[in-house]
Length: 254
Image (tube, rainbow, N blue to C red; front, top):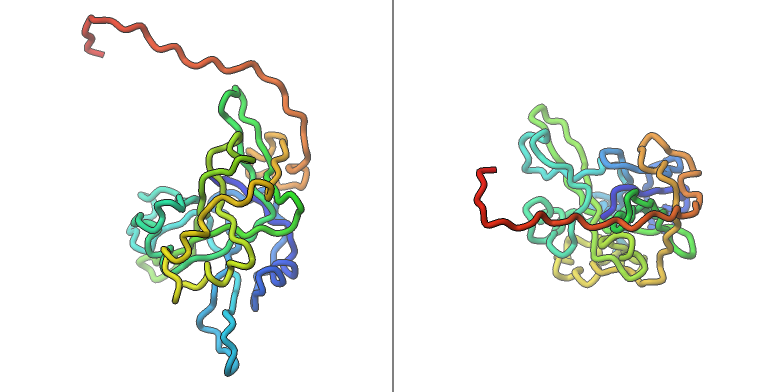
């Protein structure tokens, strides 16, 4: 699951990291929430190359976080797809075409997750690369066209089973694509979903570290850097499991 993340790296740093020819300018963002614009990196097949230059041209664009498949008629009747399960995305109607034709990278500085199991009050964590820097989530995008001809680019984050460092907080985490695999992941011309399935696995257990933070991140209107300040975890009494009602042989209408 990935419901909030942050991107604080500069545009110049992103351009160097992703080797992008074009990059959208942006301000540091500490609490990116669903339906907000997010940056995605994709291969731009329309850019003219010099003779003999076979390197892919990568560009960035802003898309709405919450994928809307191109075949949807009325977006009001369709759920907000902020995440896609990597294990089944290639077979699901909503993600099948993007997995084949529109794979992207999503720049991030880390993500937020909430530990709920065994707690009366969820504990928020800021999950960041242990050694800092930029991380690239695996993403999917699609373009939805309205009846008036207007278009909107939308996208989702691919998730996978959490590794041992994160699983005590949540059972899912974003798929991370390492720089040495960028070209293969973004190559939707030659690489089919089955060819890149080996990339859709949990990142190494020592890649991320989880920092407990305050519940201020729960509100999308809170956008300051203090959201990532470490806090002490408040001890809470164990949550007792609900007691099942006593079984009875008497029938009931309710």
